[in-house]
Amino acid sequence: MKKIIVVGSSNTDMVIKSEKLASPGETVLGGEFYMAAGGKGANQAVAAARLGGNVYFAAKVGDDLFGKQAIENYKNDNINTDFVFIDKQNSSGIALIMVDKNAENCISVAGGANNNLLPEDLEEVINIINKDDIVLMQMEVPIKTIEFVAQEASKRGALIVLNPAPAAKISKSIIEKLFLITPNKNEAELLTGISIKNDDDIKSALLKLREMGAEKPVMTLGSKGSAYLSNDILEFVASRKVEAVDTVGAGDVFNGALCVAISENMDFKKAINFASCAASISVTRKGAQSSIPQRKEVDMII
Image 1 (cartoon, helix red, strand yellow):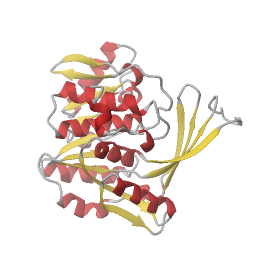
Image 2 (cartoon, one colour):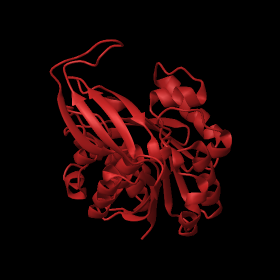
Image 3 (cartoon, rainbow, N blue to C red):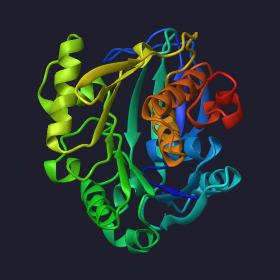
Image 4 (cartoon, one colour):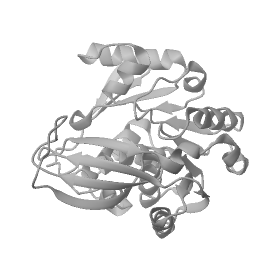
């Protein structure tokens, strides 16, 4: 069975849900507070595991209660945690999240140990990567770590997937090693320099990403679904219409699910639809990892 090796961040999310998002200098009262396991890397690893993937997670957490609880949670989801390292010097990552009545959110992250996940930590991880394994990464760990993993995994014939979030500039040397890149609209604009206002702009941005070296660019469009190229033809996969409660982590569920579908050799359009269905379930629930569905839930609505 192909491995899905997720290299990325592990956070604990502290969430306040209120009527509106606070503006600078403003205090908003009357919110509801809860804590949830999060981090883009961890969310994607959990999503892939719950949806049937053979998942290994490479990350770094602090030597604190948050980190210890995170590792236990990953084990409970049948994720291999051999490469979740303990950082004795830095705290576990923490994300402060505000969510408004329309399920829009703003997030501030203290990276902690995530910022100390370095190439030298990952030598053993590289050694387990085989041809056609899937390596999934995001942008909440150091860019030099992403560069190192992309370079070494490509030498071994792995399929490298990058979710370029949070938005950041990425060198062509990374993009040209990618099997798949999954930006949202804002991330695609930053990567390509193309202002996206209509379908023609979406196509232009996807073509540009492909020209930069990414074999299969996919753009996520929130409630409008996602877009990809079939040869040079722009194709859309619509999202299911649901009543969103919390959109935190929806993109991570999409990415984890898409990697599972690819590992199972699904037709690409069906793979995107599978990922979209998984994400549509997650937005109807609170939290990041707590909202991630099991495989049987997704299979029921495909």
